[in-house]
Image (cartoon, rainbow, N blue to C red):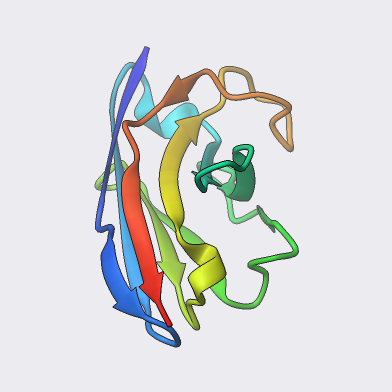
Length: 122
């Protein structure tokens, strides 16, 4: 029972940066591992990054490692995805997700935001 709301998507030129935000609300929003996923047209939903809420452990997909950074601000119940050196291949709808259990890394996620569009022009 956690509600998620993404924001910060938009259009950016290749090589630019963008920061996505995911605001969590509801029951114990600080107790969930939080992840970012993305889905491009014709592609399967792809894992991007995850952060262990209340800790500092993170994991990244190989495709974004070194360029993207997931962070948290528990005082605001918000998770961020800082995206640098963006490329057209990063164009997708980005989704925030909360894991339903405490397993690490999360094997599944149960709550999802509505998604925010990120478009990277060449």
